[in-house]
Each structure stands twice: as structure tokens, then as C-alpha cells.
Amino acid sequence: MREFIRVRTSADGSETVSWWTGDVYGWQQDDGPHHLFGFEGVNAARAVEVDGGWQLLTREAAIYLDPKTREVIDTWDNPFTGRTVDVMHVFNDPVNQRLGNFQVPTTRVGDQVVFNTDILLAYPSPLKVAEYPENSASDTYRAMELFQFFAKASDMESDLDDVPSVFSWCRTSPWLPWMAMGQLQGGLVYHCRGGKIAEPSARLVERVGEHYLHAPENAEGRNVTSWTAFRDR
Image (cartoon, rainbow, N blue to C red; front, side, top):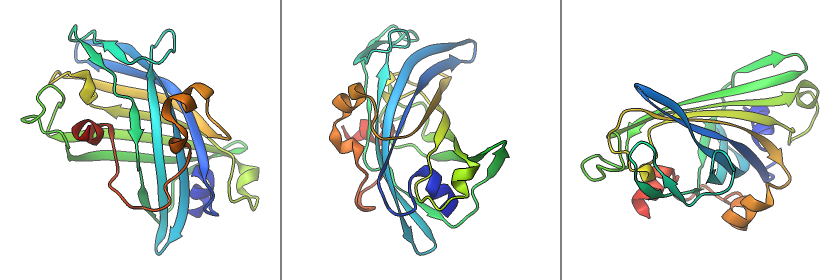
């Protein structure tokens, strides 16, 4: 786990910032896939060693973009319903995770080491269909978050606490609550790539603010998702 922490953030408790960019696609049983959005975001993280593993402390923000112009959008003409809806960008604070001392799967590819973490999710949805009929597809939230982190083998063999890395991220999820898709079948696929950097794009920093460039100091507070943020807005 310490080897993965070196790649994901830093094993000495230092704060790191990761940036990503990519695209969001939507599909239905007999329609699509459609290129719906561009997507750009930032995650600030630190890891603290605790009994039995590590506490990963993070917060993240992301913006939805026009898929062609790559400009930030605040309203969206939903092609599936014909309605114009307000876009709810991502401001998740915090997004913490307790990690035990397990072996993260790795693959050696030439002079690189690849760590993969496949997060399979199924839990009661914060948005029950009876209470949010326009915004919830099911009483169970089902999704997958599939990450691959790439680092140089020579860096992994060094004594660096903070190993330079890049990553890919794929996510499958239900329709977002603010899309107002009701129980229409189908869903979303996010396909992004990024890495640890000194500072994300000026546009993103201006939009999300300095707060999201720094990790939480502790594990207090419930994790925030797009679904809980919609419920609590």
C-alpha cells in the first residue's frame, strides 16, 4: 500500500494536486453513444499513515464543458428530453478513503509500473425515486470507478516519497441528477486522463477557487458526491 500511496499522492504526508481532462458519453438501449460533455477537474490529496493502513484525505472539483468548443457550460440542452437544464458542476468536499495494508494490483509494462484500482459500487441511492422522480434512476446507486496509475520503474526503485505519475480514469454511472432523466434507461461513461502537477489550468482555478487546491486537514465530515450535493443543495 505504501508503494501505491507514493504514486497516488505522497508517503510523507505532503499535499499533492492532480489534474485531469476528458469526456463524458451517454447511451441508451437503442440509441447512442452520444458525446455529451467535456470534463476537467482537480483533486487535492494527502495521505496519513494510521493503524492498519492509510487515511487518504482529498477534495475535488470539476467542470462540465461543451464537447466541441471545450468552453464551460452552465446550462445544457438535453437531447434526450428536449429540456434545458442547469448544469451542476462538481464540488466534492471531502472525498476521503480509509485504505488497509493490502496489495494494490500492479503490472510491469516495459520501464513502467501500472497500479490499477477497480472500485465497484452498489449502495442505497441518496436520491430515492419516490422523492426525486425526475432526478433518480433507481433506489440503488450502481457505478464503477476504474483507475490506472502509471509510474517509472526507476522512480519506484528510488527513495522518493512523492513519485511522479500519470493516470487514466473510466467511470460508468447512472444519469446525473441535474440532467432530469427520470427513469429513462441508459447511463454515462466518463473517459479521462491526468496526473500529478504543480498547478491546474488557470481557467479551472478561477472557476473552482483556491480551496479545492488544498487537501483536508483531517477525516471529519461525510463524503460528498454529485448525488448528495444535489440532495443537500
